[in-house]
Image (cartoon, rainbow, N blue to C red):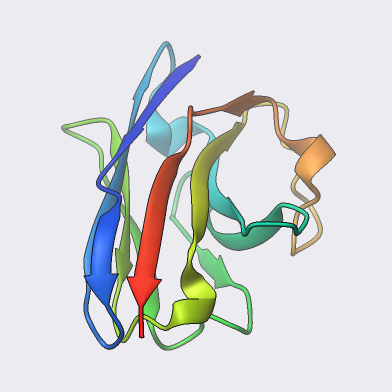
Length: 126
């Protein structure tokens, strides 16, 4: 599975961005897909996930109500719509795929992910 992430950039606090993650090798509806992020000097942390099949979604408490994860099966792409951005959201965002279905407990651990995208930088200015 290859994951190609895009959509990062510089935005003012309160603004919005949409990240995209296009997969090849597996259909996004048949695997668990998610987003993690790593802020400067911090460990990578879970942000959101969309599960295979029916597409149940889960979010970190820090982004709940502001971020929305979704997928477009026809484009084999997962999105992360980020609204009401805060400076604390500044990080490199990584999309991840769980093809082994290890994400049985939410939030999933970083080491339970099978594949990673290259990361896209989101910078939120105050």
